[in-house]
Amino acid sequence: DTAVSQTPKYLVTQMGNDKSIKCEQNLGHDTMYWYKQDSKKFLKIMFSYNNKELIINETVPNRFSPKSPDKAHLNLHINSLELGDSAVYFCASSQTGLATEAFFGQGTRLTVV
Amino acid sequence: QKEVEQDPGPLSVPEGAIVSLNCTYSNSAFQYFMWYRQYSRKGPELLMYTYSSGNKEDGRFTAQVDKSSKYISLFIRDSQPSDSATYLCAMSAGYQLIWGAGTKLIIKP
Image (cartoon, rainbow over all chains, first blue to last red; front, side, top):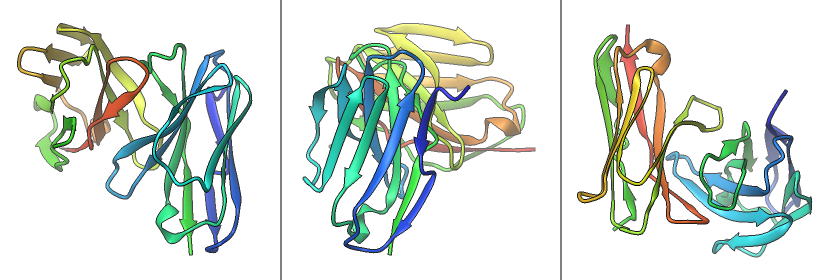
C-alpha cells in the first residue's frame, strides 16, 4: 500500500504549456506539502495545507496554484511552464501541522523543453 | 548565510566504517530535528527524529543534538553499501521544515 502517491512520475512538456501533478495520501494525515528539489538536491517548500486550508505559501510564481479538494489530496497546477521549472516535485504529508515526520511521495520529475 | 548548513560531499568511506554526518544551524528557535535518507530517484524517508537536545539511537544509527553549539549529527555504525544515499537534515520550530542541502554518502564495498 503506497502511503503518499503522486502522478505522473515523469512529465516532459514544452514551454508555455499548462500541467498538473496529483497527490494522494492514505495515512489519514491532516497536513500535506509540495516541495521542489533542484538539481543540487536542495529541497524547498512551496505550499502546505492543513485540513484543506493553505498554511504555508512560500514565494513562488503565481503560475503555481495548489488545490486541495479534501485532506487526502493536494494537487499542483502549473501554468505557462518555463525552462526553470524543470525539477523534481515532491508531495509529502504529516500527522500534524508541526511539520515533523513527513512522509514523501516518489516525486514527479518535470522536464520543460 | 543559510539557516541550515550541510556539507554536500560526496563522502566516501569503506564498508564497515563509522560515518559521521553533520549540520549546523543559526535559528535557536528550532526544537525538532530530523534526518532523512534519500536514495537516487526516490523521495526522502525519515530516519531519525529528535526533539530538543540529546541523543537517540536506532539500530546502527545515532542522532545527536547539541543546541548550545547549534550542531546536529548522525552517526552510522558498521556502514553497509546499502547505506549509500543522500542524507538530509531538517529542522523545525513549528509549521515549516528547514532543510540542509544533503550530504551524498558512498560506502565502498
